[in-house]
Length: 401
Image 1 (cartoon, rainbow, N blue to C red):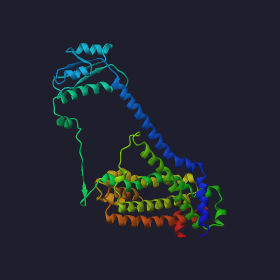
Image 2: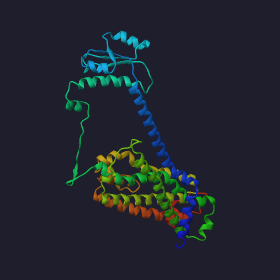
Image 3: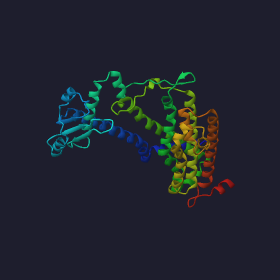
Image 4: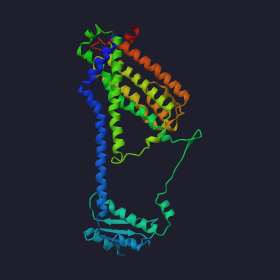
């Protein structure tokens, strides 16, 4: 194993020099940046349009059969009253009047009718907004402030929940442990292909024979796996830095939710469990993908098996609601303990706090054993399959040997 450091440095530096690595590494931050930029400029444009709309005046006639509209309020909006509905509709139709509102006698049974001149798809909504504001503000003058707040849904609520005799916020408590789930999803989705082709490059270039004359197969594959783990850590840093910067310095401009990070609940046990599950899951699927790359003669052929692995990894996402609402169901238990589907259910259930101690111990034990087996098989497959250029080596031959 004295060549392990040499293999690690070679694989690590070789990958860092590839343009494709940096393209993939920067793709996610650039996409996030583009999305944030679109949100920022969209919010600016929307706010500007809303402000311009407020300052725009338009001619308005109102028919109030309900008797609820306040005369002073109508004057403030520059509206005049008329009892002839059809004449005012005709004025709007021929363009001599900008807007006409008709309030029926019984608003609980009939609809307020708004007739207006088109001013663009984004500005047409101002007419209905004014019609609604006229009604709400007029009625608000006849009702005390407390009842108005209730009717307009402006009452503030401060909910406090408790767990084990202590204040507990389930959503905030899930943020830190949930980071491991997000990182796992991103790394496998964006870095999985690199794991897959790491063992097929030398095979396709036909230089593997020369490499194996000086380096043992086990040393070579372990060095490759360690380099993949180091490269994955770099990818994590590249992904997290722009997200943190965007939240800390541009949260208000991007309309991001305000989360008080100073008082964020920190549960050392759940964070430790999440980290263990993340590491074991990453090692398990690294072993699987390296095995697929070793047993396949070309990266193209290995790509077909990569899709199957992705189905096992991300398939449980379709049952996310079950992991939260029915964590004790047999189906959830199976997905939690079956090694190929376990990562996402275990990390999600750990984040929301319904992963039982029994499931935790069983799940981590199964993942640990599966990761060791997967890495051992990867080394074994690489040893016997790396020199097969024209066919996919049957697993029966590998295990028989």
